[in-house]
Figure 1 (tube, rainbow, N blue to C red):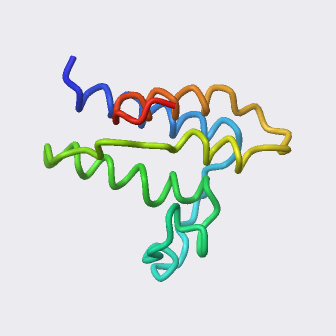
Figure 2 (tube, rainbow, N blue to C red):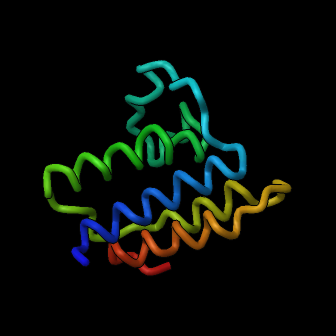
Figure 3 (tube, helix red, strand yellow):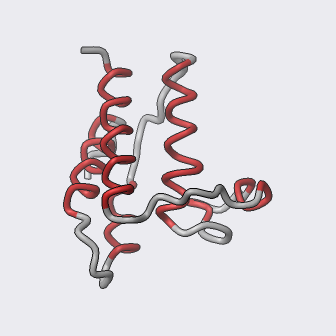
Length: 108
């Protein structure tokens, strides 16, 4: 299986996990919120929104165009911090994000 296919499979898992824990928004944020230049768009989006509206679409775009993927990733630590103390079953999401970090060379 190609590296791109592996990335797509994990993106599907991330989406499924976000939906399962109730962190998938039906309505997109305002366009200006998506133009943040801060890491993880922390000034305009929460982490789950960043995954849904920035990370997942960007990765799908890169895969579709067969462009270079990021060489490093550290998404899992951000997710652990964001979900810390929340009473959500995030183990599956964290596992999927860890797989993505490994695929992108960040290991986590």
